[in-house]
Length: 208
Length: 148
Image 1 (spheres, each protein chain N blue to C red):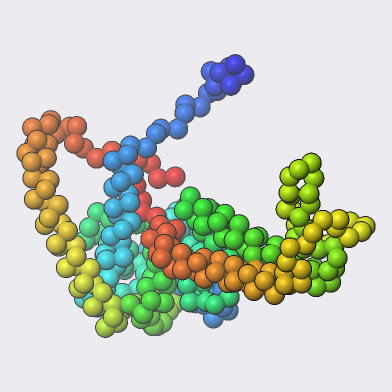
Image 2: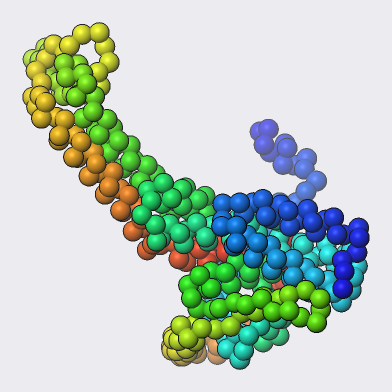
């Protein structure tokens, strides 16, 4: 049984869009998915052969980007749960953040963690390159002590007292790395713990 | 003020606010779909459209078609189902799914949980059934919503 000629182009465009939207997945999986959806369209339209049946079948599947999103969200979260890649875990949390308030909270907290860890790590590096200008600094001004952090910017050395000195380098590198690692581990753990029901919700839409 | 004027001038009525009970029912159906698919595959291999028809005929789980295939892919990734392309008389191959041993175990475990939960809820809800039977039948009709 063949699809009517006028509908064939619509189906081809739908499948091509689906294939394009699934480009993040493995080629073998993409081929499998597209072939299965194609087979579904042929099965659904085999009885009537009318353009209306094809249009109704495509409408029931949802738009190609919507359908691809269901596959991709599931695939991405699944890979992230098994992955040790911080980039993949972070991308999954970003995707999760678009799906739920919980995901948004985890995204913000992990973002804060990565920022704090990153800033501390960078400060350690800058202290190594600009020992006079970067680091902690205590100023005594109008009877009060002020603790400030410098990142090497400015024209001259600090005028106050550096309480840690070059010890700041290993402290910042270790502490920054630790915070970055801890943030990654907590993000991955949260993803594993909480995304299974979300994956269901994202992948499953029951007709009301 | 501008908002009030523009609202009054609009020809379109505001979208209906979904009934909380309906939303809860949708969530309940979503949560049971995985078990329903495993149950549909219990008797033997089926391809996607057969699974959909099985769900429609065997329950009132009317599932949007585009959601079953990603879910089947997920179940396969979890090792609960296996899939195989089979040539058919219709002229194109079909992807058949069948339960793996892990899938059968999962289906049985979920069924036990479902039965236990359902029994405990039924006893808890018995007084409500009695009260509900006193309500005129017309008010208990399910609300039919249009699918976008």
